[in-house]
Length: 339
Image (cartoon, rainbow, N blue to C red; front, side, top):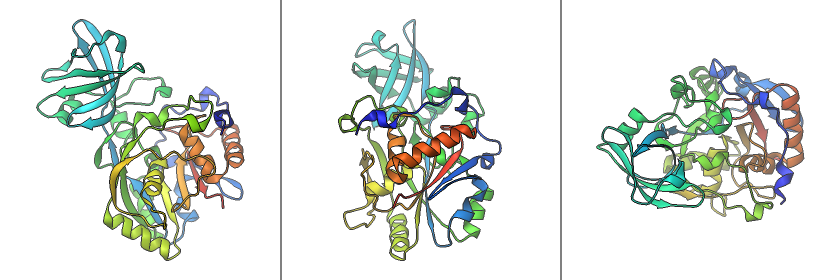
């Protein structure tokens, strides 16, 4: 499909640079057979007892680092773990780096350039007594570039779901940012079953598709995990005719990647580069809670596959007209599968 089909104009003032306060004060656009304005606290009203909600429990690491190679200032954004203390990263100015160079981020924390790529990405071997401890000491939260501001102390909490437990993401699973303890309690009181999976979100999630045709796009890969217990709960619910609700496109990608040809979810701990565009047949997910996504992004393509391109374009036009807040710190969409 032509990538231009997934383009739309978004006024800059619709981009949220701060989260709703409290988290569950966000609005929610419901997209089913009609478009309906609602709010995230009304989410339980759209679900049924016995439905299963699947959350991504990944935890964002402070993946943005500032260091020096000699007298040159170097900014590094971690993209993906490649091995023990080895990361693929974006470095600026990457042209000033050579293989073998050492970047100093702080006392006892440095990295050696192991590889360079024309895209500006580098392979870094970190050296520290404890990588994660050093990262938390010297790193900052990797806010999406479209926010156009530096991370603040408040982002350490705001850009993290309240149930985050598995460190490894360099971007937040943003649909989960709306949830509070009272909203989770309301869902459980309704009889909704909650399970967790893991997808360590990579920075590639924000990148627009540059290829003119989606067939020519090379999808980034991300690490996923789903336990035998979670798979069993979801499979039994599906077999009983219950709905599966994915909280975020990351949870959906885990579920669709782990489902076999017979529609059964299998436990998994692997990489996925699943790329979902219109024409894809969803195997397991019935409802998707997500945020508003960037034009020409793989995520807007995914929601267009889920609910229909024309319907999503109409929904986004409505959201822009009604002053919904877009992107990571923005409002939510509740999407029902385009059957």
